[in-house]
Length: 136
Picture 1 (tube, rainbow, N blue to C red):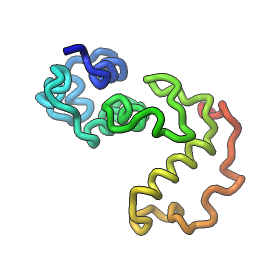
Picture 2 (tube, rainbow, N blue to C red):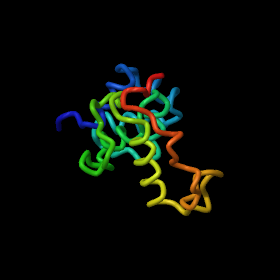
Picture 3 (cartoon, rainbow, N blue to C red):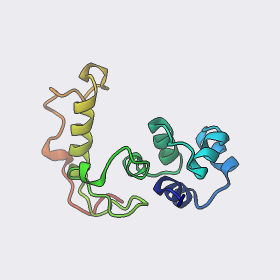
Picture 4 (cartoon, rainbow, N blue to C red):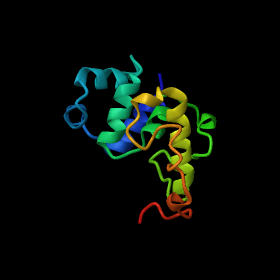
């Protein structure tokens, strides 16, 4: 069996770190990481997100690499590289997509203050930023 897209992603974001180092960094059991490498199991979505966050990468790109999402399901957010270069995507587009996904998948009562679907103060022009300004 060829190496999975998921394992290639793991190697890319961790810089080829050893399983034990990945386990220490992420809090994921080393035996789970070993099973991913062998292609014996698919990681749980929670583990996918934990790995991405531990290494400073987008959880969305990790979910694509693990097969939970398809690239064509990403809407306005286009992943430009597997390592998450979103520098040419406007902040407004990223926030709109994030809000759309969260609103569609969770009870709005569980949201932090200011994120409720009926909060008119969210999404105003003061949050707009031109494309390419993410790194500032």
